[in-house]
Length: 308
Image 1 (cartoon, rainbow, N blue to C red):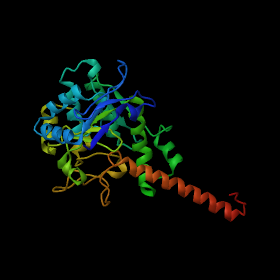
Image 2 (spheres, rainbow, N blue to C red):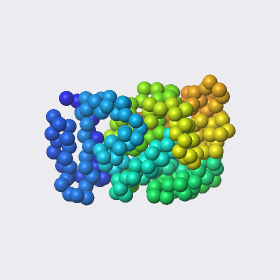
Image 3 (spheres, helix red, strand yellow):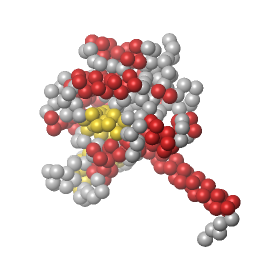
């Protein structure tokens, strides 16, 4: 039977104990050490079954299932409406400290000031929530980013921008925090590639992604935010519906899709962290080959003898 093996320890740790798997049950047992992170193993039929069951549940029930079923569970969010609703739902569950869900926020250094102010407001409202902030490697400011990669990298090379500002920091966070599963803010009503979203997914590297509000519309999430007086981004009162970096986000007009203001006029619909990792591995390889070719051409033009 084909299977999706979610080898969580293997993803985030350099060494792991051998695993004894019972293929029929889909159970995977790791080291007996209490300090080890247990593996999670789903067969494809099991994953389909889980999605059929979770599809019928309210977001709060999906979150309860995640907390009891998925070790190394974190929430990744840029504090949009859906992420904030998820955060608020979790805060009302009275989860014991060891099981509380920490938050990972990727500071691209190009967020709106309103987004960064919101982070502080969220900390004030939810003091028990740990927010782990990850920035581009070795860089603290937008000016430093520009010096490192050149001005307006998102226009010159948007894939490199996505890698440097989002994908690499996300992978570093998952590795350092031993993240095995993440709660996302993606919903089907956001359109694009998200239109056929499952509740629970497994990416090609084995990371479990859960979309607890996948079934909700923008209006349902907005109603939750208002009813529970959840702090939210001020930009959402100015015509924005999905807020990302300042250079790639615009307000939307009546009748447009929720994410129509992201990368307007471009075929792009995702920022990179939800794209296949193999895409970026191939991109980085192409970048390296291009650098090698440029170095070779410069050497030839300079008349330097190249040893082979």
